[in-house]
Image (cartoon, rainbow, N blue to C red; front, side):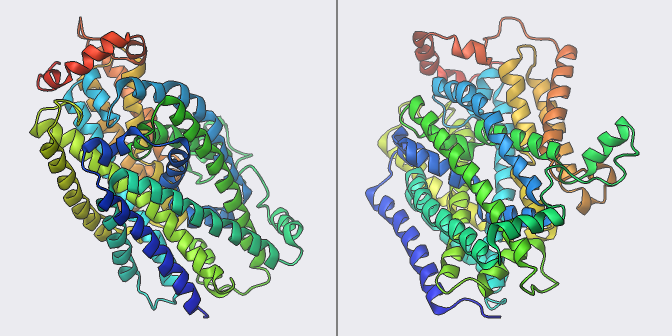
Amino acid sequence: MRGLHAIDWIVCAVYLLGITGIGLFFYFRGARSTKEYFLAGRSMGWLPVGLALMASLTSGIGYLAQPAGAVKYGLITLWALAGIPLSYPIVVWVFMPFYHRLQVYTPYEYLEKRFHVSVRAMTSAMFIVWRITWMAAVIYAPSLVMSIVTDNKVPLKYSVIAMGVLSTTYAALGGTKAVMWTDVAQFVVMFGGMILAAVLIVAYVPGGLSEIWGTLHSTGRARMTANIPAWGEADIFGRFKLYLYTDVTAASLIISATVGKLGNYCVDQALVQRYLSSRDLKTARSGFLCNCFAYSFYIVIMAVVGAGLFAFARYYDFPKTLRNDQVFPYFIANVMPIGAAGLLVSGVYAASMSCLTGGINSVITALTNDFYNRFRFKRANLDAGNLSASEQRHHVWLARIATVVLGGIETVAALYVGKMGDIYEIANKLINGFIGPLFGIFVLAMFTRRVQTLSVVSAGLVGSVVAGLTIFSKQLGLPLFQVGFQWPSVVGLIVTVVIGYTLSFVIPEKAGKDNWTFRGVMNRTEAAKSGDQAGDEVAAGVNRR
């Protein structure tokens, strides 16, 4: 095995040092206020917002998972693109103006107004636990690449530790602004490596794109529908069961991608925090549109990489022991030219570090805003109560300490991620797995008036348990819950909404409560909104339900 050349190592080192330098730059510039540290002073333009959204969602897992999915399943994986246009109007015309009107630090603040502080704490905790498991996988992905491209000369555990330490360091130093501007730099590295990989793979396949297409067509991987055994003999209920228990179908990709994108862009603090940092609503919308184009291009180009690798395998003797998620790293180490291999490895690290640092920063924001500040100081959010300069510096200092602790937890958890399956399965389970119940709670809160605290808490807990059982069904030995790995988010969403709304008929609506539904919030006058904000600190200390 050839492995990485000295030039490749230099390319990787220059990239890693440059990223750390950005964190140090923003540290010495000084993010001293809570708004500056957690929301970049609400001053970011559309380009960093858009690219940070893209970088926060796209990790090294996606860098490996998308080609691995195309190698295993073919071009049917392109149906995931449908999630962008289907979710776009809801994100832009419903949730963005809603959060802009509320001026929150986290989406979960709203749920205290609508229900009770217990719902805010529960949903914020759901997000934190989900993001921690996801970020452990994010650390694992580039570490797997490094282990393969060095023929295990850099063992997986050492790479995991190095990745965790480096990402935690610059996330702690600079806050949200440092994370978002490093996301921009990492976007350039990530996309540069991705495009280079696609061009080289196509060039290396004799016959180029026409040969790749012919190979896909002859092997059935050009199909845009799933080939499900026993489909023709099954009745309508049998077909529903087959669809539910088949890993990849057109319907599962479209539905799960749409639910996943709605959850990510609407209630996932890691992404919501990106457009909360924008200077105004118009900027946030422009940034989100930029993200949509970038993400669509990413899905297409990575499908080309996966399809090209599948065709290239006819002309190159890959080891038979390689899993689907190991083919691309092996190709980088043994086929790509010197220098280009270093750029590709840097691209995997760039994708992972941007997602990881954004995730760490968002989790710390939720911990500080929804727990420490809320329960320790009885304040609705970090803007309430006119914090003194010393109090704000205290919050920032505490956030940096918490970032270091969280980074350590995730680094340890990353050592156990590989036991969940190949990277494509891990990605689809952990990216969207727990977002379904969380999104379901917001659906009940924003679009129904009759659902109350006990109903939504019960629904959220049951939905999370059911989603968790579908994700870890193999490890737990529960065949009933072993549905296709695209479905956990959808199952969690449906269970949460159905149980919550059903319980609302058993638990009656309280009379005379404020209307904090979507329509109620958006119909408030600016004067009323100002009054609500002024009373937040007082209201936060009262059990209003």
